[in-house]
Length: 274
Image (cartoon, rainbow, N blue to C red; front, side):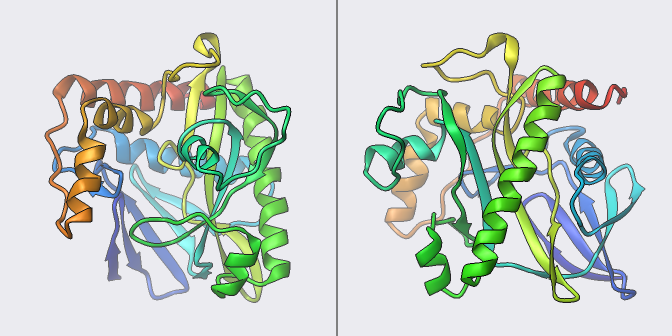
């Protein structure tokens, strides 16, 4: 087994048999800043959610088997340099980009925070330190994908999102948006990476309300705390000066709440206890 890389959340090892080992950690990051504090049980939940979603979704993917409480084995493949984001609600970075005229939405759309979009939209980004949204023309121009691949990714990503929306609804949640990654194996594009609370926004249906910040059962809890306390602005200011942002200390009560909500979400989706 050969160590390959340590990402924001997981460590990757080459098993040298055509497969990789993903080891999920309790590490956490937000706004491209890594924190020294960890979120207990996070790695285990991410691992279990990855297994759950790969088994639930009827699309070719690279999942092989679960290896341990925090590890899965997947097929090695060549990842596409594009993050496939699907948005079903008017939230997150979509709001600011719409206000800046960077995104077109239907003229009759009631653009209130957290409003459901008429139809899910494919809103991909580059894969970089700071992801940048790209449309079809720009994605092709940057040689991220071909015209045909972009169309396939758009159609498939939205289909996956709609299937996950149905499953989330049955569990009492709203799946607001989703990030997927794909790669090529033997010349075919298949679903890869992992799927869990670090890759989507999840809201409880019983507290959902248009026009306000939503209760979150994902990493958005940390993002909201950072924004409300002015840290996101400080991060941007530091980067503008060419400096690396300094991560604040995550409060114990927030760490506890994140663990609790990750666990609750998993148990509601799977009907299994942690």
